[in-house]
Length: 330
Length: 261
Image (tube, rainbow over all chains, first blue to last red; front, side, top):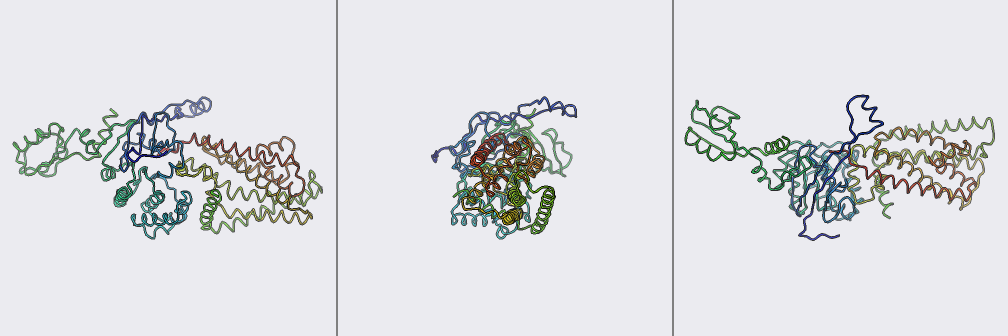
């Protein structure tokens, strides 16, 4: 099966996955009873998700723990069979795990490693070369290019166990990209890394996408990752898509408030009449006001109070996301 | 050939891994020596009372013992470590990485671990079998040697399949350590030709745990005891077990959901 260049890389149509999990009450008696009579409960981890991703896109996949992100990624990489609906990646049905499909994708999981613990990463790269049957010349140039891009240099000759968490992640990423996949599924690739390392990895992903035109689907708990990399986000919660669109649109749609930072010329003015004061630092006040009323309140403030400085800010993306999930849960 | 190429590459990395722990080598030699000594003592004890055991002479029993050592060496060096690793990977979800590779997953999970020091037992087993052959002045021709190698390969295939069937249960049972102990206990019976055991146990050791095909049958090939019927049965059971193992593995995979997140 071949793929036309203008076709979407990922097509997900009403995809769902239901797990049957054993369930019992706490306590010894309940445990004994469950030995004989097992109760199972259906968990709808993914409940009818649809979206498409075009070639070359970097899409952020957001949602709280248990939202169905990882389950969806696993169905897209062929690790799980969908209970219903269909997923196609590069025109293939992932669950069939055809070698021609698997050669074109890669999966990076921030919480699991695949490299040999006791050996230098270089040895693990050789294993990967054998698995993918990569020609030696192409393999070397890809490997060296990645080593240079991620600035790991001689670290590839040190046993993986002696590397820091961040260095190890870089090695994992190199290992995952040696076969030059067209589609990257990155599940929390910056998990547990310090801010500098997160930024490095982020910059690398952006550069890799620019150089190779690879499609990237990324989940992360760090909104900074998403803000820096993804113009488009898909927000998933309770197994359903809550939002699919531009990151700015998410803020637009879900941020019901604006933050107003006002600096006044004198003390003794009560700003509570204009909005909820959420912080105060000397003459500098931070107010939270309803989005719709922002222009009006701003105008009133400027007219009625001795304003030295006034800035209208969109709330931080983290807050917006939190709000999205809070609203949904209510 | 794809299979051989991958095996070589993985074995190389496995050996590199093990070379980091040189002390293991010396412990392994010690362990093998003690095991051999115990086995020889038990053999000597038996032959203080009799000169023949179910039709096997002392020298021939030494051959059986050698082949037992060889086989348990192979199990400990490659089969068991890979299966233990598989069970662990199923448990913590690391099997995900294997399943996203464009190579048959069963092949990959079977060749990842190489505890090379355990091959000491293989060498020692061959040595013991050789001593038995010389001591008993047991001659063999090319045809017998080929049969012996063929039966060894069938035995390895049967043991591997048996292990894979056991380990495939790790997709539903978390603990497989008990199964490993069970196997080791039963496999130890292979020190002796299965013909010395009572009928029910012989059936168990032939068709349930393939000890008979792994140890006794290759020894029969070497000591000119192998009948055509046994030969056909050995090939049939090995291939049959392999097919069943493949089905069990597929079934296990279909139940695999990966440790979540």
